[in-house]
Amino acid sequence: MTRSVLSVADLSADEIGQTLDLALETKRGRRTSAELAGKTALLIFQKPSLRTRVSFELAVSNLGGRPLYLSPPEVGLGERESPEDVGGVAGRYCDLIVCRTFDQSNLERLAASSGVPVVNALSDWEHPCQALADLLTIREHGGAKGRVLAYVGDGNNVARSLVLAACGEGMHVRLASPAGYELDAASVDAASQRADASGGSIVLLSDPSEAVASADVIYTDTWTSMGQELEATQRLEDFTGYQVNAELVAEASPAAVVMHCLPAHRGEEISDDVLDGPQSVVLDQAENRLHAQQALLAWLFSR
Ligand code: CP
Ligand code: NVA
Image (tube, rainbow, N blue to C red; front, side, top):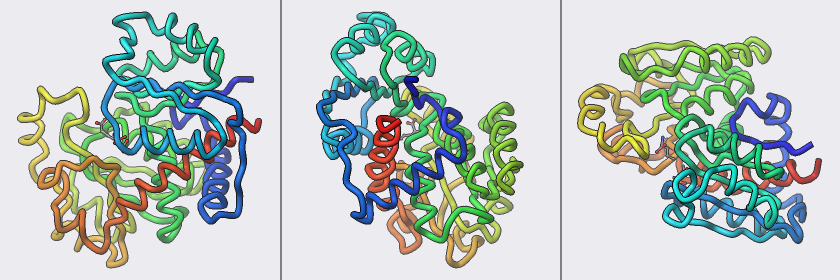
């Protein structure tokens, strides 16, 4: 059966655990493999990218495959052609589609029409590959189970994927967002169900200090995601008081690590001294995109 990963929910908590095990083995040089030998991966990107594009191109190449990148103006997904027509054609040439898009339904339509696995490289709704890399990073920095993850900021695509994955790994998740920017109730419910099975928990708060008190991991993301640029001024105002800065980090566990998926809007959601400081693990996160995605693709194509 063709498996796609459009959302963290497409992977069970066990499958996420296995993928992370595989990623660690590969990262430590204990495993090489060629699950994509002779295969072509089409990378369709409707938004800009540094980490996701580079790490997917390398992951595909490392597994013996060939990446083929289509930039935003070349894609025309839903403009030049319908997602069904793009998917139908791509499925005749390629063995895998990796897609960064706005609307989550574009991913579903590509998966339904192409007949090949589709992997979400970020949509407005989710960023599942980021969440895999984040959990890999948390494993390397003290582990996930039973530890407290405080997410401070927008209840966005990154938050949605992160909390589902983290709750599946047994973390105690606290989300602090301003009114109107909370994670939606259905996503919180889904995370809560995974938490019930793993011994974790999830709670929605509004006070960043309450969220980070004695926390082991502090995570934030931009207040203005790609596609929301027209709301930037309003968002800057609405997120006042939600910056992850030295004062806030001092309220967490002294050993806490600070995470950010990048790109950062320095001086907005995070201060320079924290992003560049000793508790920041943002470059480990960025590196782990490669290891996590390589493991995910190896797992998808070894089944
Ligand atoms: N974190 C992340 O997805 O970065 P890019 O937008 O650069 O790919
Ligand atoms: N929430 C951000 C993440 C970027 C990696 C965005 O969607 O722009």
